Length: 122
Image 1 (spheres, rainbow, N blue to C red):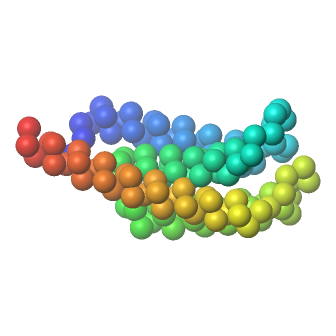
Image 2 (image 1 turned 135 degrees about the vertical axis):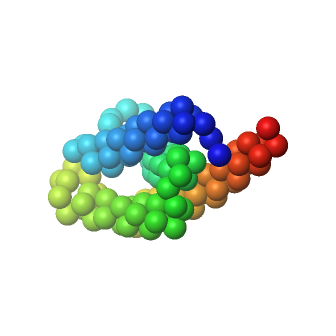
Image 3 (image 1 turned 90 degrees about the horizontal axis):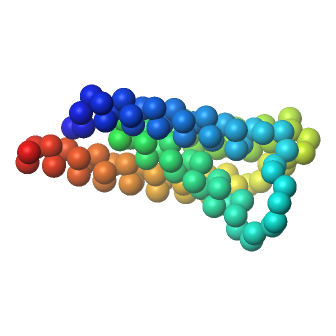
């Protein structure tokens, strides 16, 4: 298990990751700039991977966290498509979001196990 201070820091990082996710997904218009192929998909994966990873390390049950994040992935694309005129919903963005959730959960579970093992050995 992690210390109380580390748990607080993890919760703070998780909260920040959720705020970043909300800004990235719901900002009325996507930022301009140079078009880099695949960057949009990388951002989508990252904004779902980070909360999944940090949430698991903070102690949120992976099943519940994963379900909530996958539901949010689908809902965010619908909101972008229906309510944000300068944005557009994209099925492939939702797919990449779900992949980000899966990778984040897997990494979070592995990291949490490692932290528990190292704590038991100490």
